[in-house]
Length: 274
Image 1: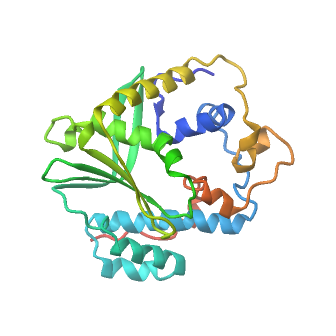
Image 2: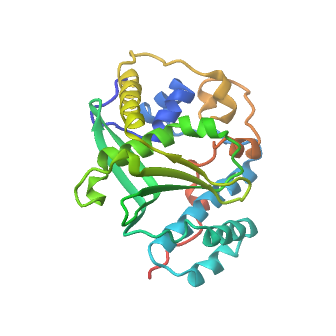
């Protein structure tokens, strides 16, 4: 099955492809919907994913102007959520100074014959011209800094802000040298990791992303290769292998594998109109 001309690439789809081309094919092209449980301890896995989504929803509402006094009682319904929420409020990223502040911002741009899209947790532009990308991490992620820097999310988010961020900057392109991306860890197990950007890296990232997209788009028909090493962390493993046990929730969370899957029935925090 060919990649449709209307397909939009994202950091998630690129990561899926690099983890396992067959997973990309099943998820984005065949659009199969019989996922297996992501973690061996299903209830704990669902709770940790819910925790991440609940935290992001609280932050989104706070950045939209809902005061902490309204949101904190919601966070206090869960002890782990309350701790992460309190850490967020005490961090410099809860109210960073800036003339532009956009939470849950979506940017997209054409690249290599397709569109590339990203949804940012928070983008802040300061009067001095610096631009900050903040991504909230709620789990106990142990990914080394060197791997975070190479992560598809880091490559896509910084590059796309330079490529498509003019609408935030009075219709002027944002210079790569004024962009910094920060991963902030709400669980408090490690300090924030900041990744400055520059023009040379921007040009390299444009080539890297174009090569990634072109490689995927040029794959031939038929079943794409499977990476068996990823089966224990893949919800599509039942299509490819038999009797592959899922990993424990804590191990999945430690490697950033639990951020994208949340059953609707667990989305318990409601939006507050303010």
